[in-house]
Length: 286
Image (cartoon, rainbow, N blue to C red):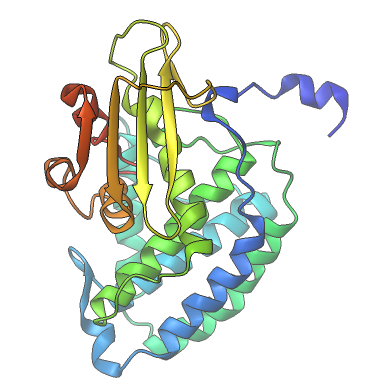
């Protein structure tokens, strides 16, 4: 990127240090294929998310793969668009359902083969992207356009989350590999400033979220005036400290559990109202 282009890219320093998810796409794709090829025939009919079977969720992933390549690699602009007065969330849910419905005639074997072919292309695409370039907005972080590092990390979290949903439907636990989980959680927590956007607090007020376990970490979001930031120094005594285990944290961010459930499981020090607001974090289109 030359100097003129760089000057046109807005600063997103309040999102914290950039995440480089690029090295994880190829191993995530390999893990997905291992999961799919290890499924028993009956597993494909199990419910993975409300209203969708494992087969449906695999078809949805294929749609995500094709969409990314068509839009960003190939510059293809033809496709579904929102209806008049349709919200972004409603449009996404409708178009996703239409894609899944259209692919119900496709067999699990054919889906697996196609996901293997197209998923490899997606991994290669992300490996070559420029992290600082402007890209699609990330609504749950409140940023549009978003830097490519956040947009790509967002896609990694979606691929990883859907793989866990498939694993759970097949009676398996969450993948314990901390390499994946650490990047997924770090990405999810970039939603904290947006989560607290309507909270008015004195400048310097800080809420800290700590996630315990392999792949965990800690994040501090600080009031900076009209907004909140992940880029400020950590203070010795935050106004609120929320401690979660890794399973609770990622499920909360993807609405696998509700905020009240997460708050009940959490260890909270300090302002419980601030802690409760932090536990309303959502890191998906919901």
